[in-house]
Image (cartoon, rainbow, N blue to C red):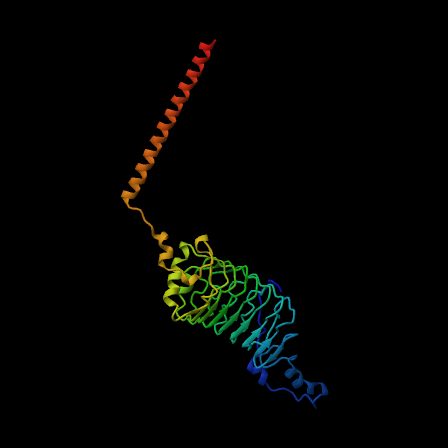
Length: 311
């Protein structure tokens, strides 16, 4: 892999392709192999770039899955629509890697070693519809991670055990998103803002996370309860890990009654009563200490007087 910016190979100009050329002579035997090499994916195809080594290319689909790759192929056919880099050992994707591939519809990075993705990776993938980032080591989903990829319909972030934070604006602008999978990660909290901007959401998977169902989770759970009829969720797998009083309870079984303690408020009279009780307790404490001191002093004097009388 590398940190250098990824660049596209310039496409040949139409004028160059159709310019008059001198008669090259009779065809050479080696040139007769060119069509076969193109078909085999080892020569430049119509996309303008050869098929990467260890990958197969067919009908604008590039499959590099299961090849034990440690880095993403440096160049792909520019007309690639379906790219699979699944089941490899890729730890990072170079910045700007997808800049050239504006026809990309499907991208699978499933089952790799990704810890994070470079900012702006999806800036030019406006036609991307399906994105699979499952079974990686992602730790957080930052704000604007999917910026400009407005066509996304499905995002799979499941089975990222270190995924502990999703920024409130992580999915901003994804109005067409229908399926979101956040299951089997390390999420203890998810803000309402992260989901309420997804009007087309139909399926939400959040089970298998260590949810802490405290007061901070109430807005999200209330929102989910109101959408449960039109948004399929893995309600059987979503459980509370804490606090202790609700540990093991299904996430969607919690009602407003469960968060009643979060809304307890004290009036002015309550505060005055608490202040008065505190004042009385403090006076009583001072008085008790004074009486104990006087009693101890009297006992000491009585004991001393008794000793003098015996002498």
